[in-house]
Length: 209
Image 1: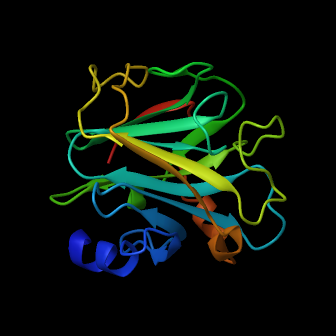
Image 2: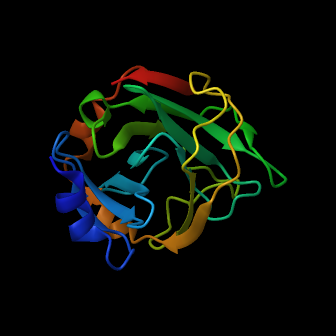
């Protein structure tokens, strides 16, 4: 797949979320793409009432990190960051009460990689995962009743200081923003099938794609 022609051309012009089906995994996400940087983040949800789980994909170009805030802002929200390390994807949950490199967050939430949607190629890297117990009720994430929540996104094209360490400090984002995502466009009858593809749950993973 030529990511630049098939992916960015279809989604990036308006930089608003739109449905996209990943060619390798076959999973359809409602996906935000930032054409200038190569950042993308997409969500997939069940057709029925949302519980606490979702499937997501995040990625970018180069060797830097990409991150998402599940609550829109950076401070006191549940964050996910990921970056490539050769053919490996490293990821972790983060949370911070002040601006700076966010610390690793721990809790009942877990990341479980989906192998056929996690890869590094000549144009981009992609990390696809099941996020279990990730929709919280404490204000740190969007809620199960939201139809049009705000999410935050950020990246830095520079690799973290310790690329193999999921707890590594990350440099301040060079690009960031918030946006609204229509969760009705993220719902699929195939969600429960896609969910079975996830590997055993881990709170912070270094996944060999």
